[in-house]
Image (cartoon, rainbow, N blue to C red; front, top):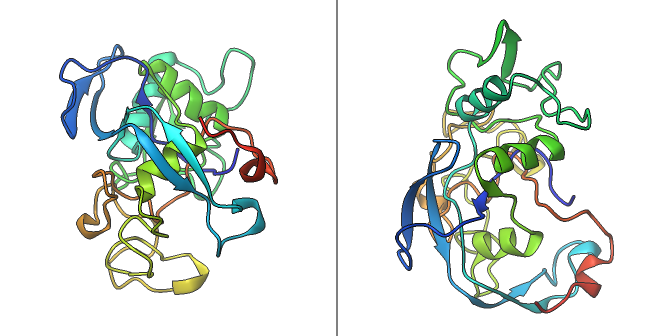
Length: 230
């Protein structure tokens, strides 16, 4: 589990309209998702300048897939919890830590976002909670490789938009590089889709910095040195 916080989902079934760059679908759970198409092909996974667990850079081939354009927001995640009627999966794993001070979904007779946070990305979701949401929606979590390709494309860039930190393209309010900066109006997380200039090469939003995201893979320090080409 290399990333933590909240999630994108990707399709576990084929959309009715194929080969379009952006599609809107209604999932089996009757939720609406806007999805970005990531075409089949190779990309360079990893970073020569990154941490040792992000090395070496290596070529990975992925089939075409569709991924959420936007992170799952508090409104969507609260609707999921209310629909299943519990905050644990069938094995008893906690889905959302409502006691954490950073959680913006609370429980009082039903799950609901704090006023004003409905469109912000749902945080303090466990890996089990991320997987359960995607399964409920008829979708699935992306792999590490899928997430990285969707975020960076195929030209080796560091960030979705290029190679330099840019406060106009992502939310950095609590990050060490820009701690205390709220020039975008959001010291904490911003509503999903707030940064038009920060979209990925395939049209996905907020894949730079806002909150960290779960992927389906379990974390391994040497994964990048051993991960398969396909």
